[in-house]
Image (cartoon, rainbow, N blue to C red; front, side):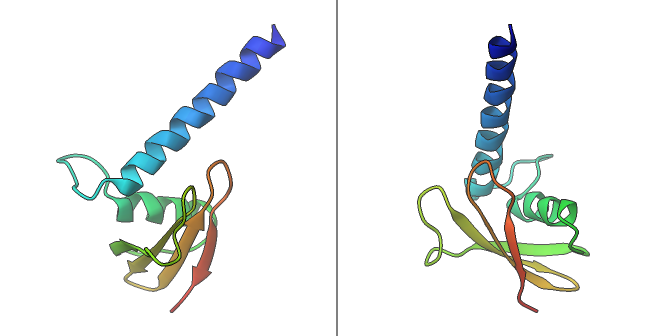
Length: 96
């Protein structure tokens, strides 16, 4: 029975990761949905960084690789480089 519960929870994690990756890769914001800047700002805040009023998020094509996205998030108070591998915490560097 534990194996079944583990598979269900692992499936939930994979599904949530896929939804997050889809939001980050979607260049067009739909009405009522979060944009990549909002999603990344929320992730940055959960890891203890301050992001007042996210202004834009730009994917860094040079540093990004398959299964490793790198974004630059500009907030009113700071600029961050945000990179993450699936199923891991994001690496966040304050640029300004």
